[in-house]
Amino acid sequence: MKKKVNVNFAAGVILLVAGVAVLAYGIYLYNVSRQSLGSALGKMFTGKSKDETTAIVTIIAGGASTLLGAFLAFARGRR
Image 1 (cartoon, rainbow, N blue to C red):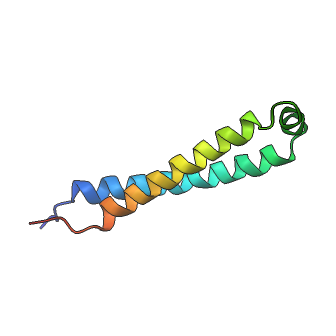
Image 2 (tube, helix red, strand yellow):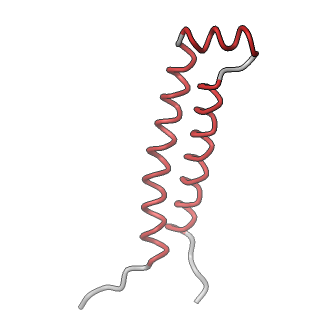
């Protein structure tokens, strides 16, 4: 007999895996942006770097996706 796959569980696992990948990529982007010469020059003139802002938004999006995926995959539904 086939087991019925829960759609919420499948979507949660996909979001969880994608969220962890985006989170890791955001952390990588942040580390690269902190070491670049263009970022240092941009910070000197404007006070903040566009690359760092993009990396932080990517980290936040990855974290949110990871949390949502974990909630969907592991939360018990009402039945």
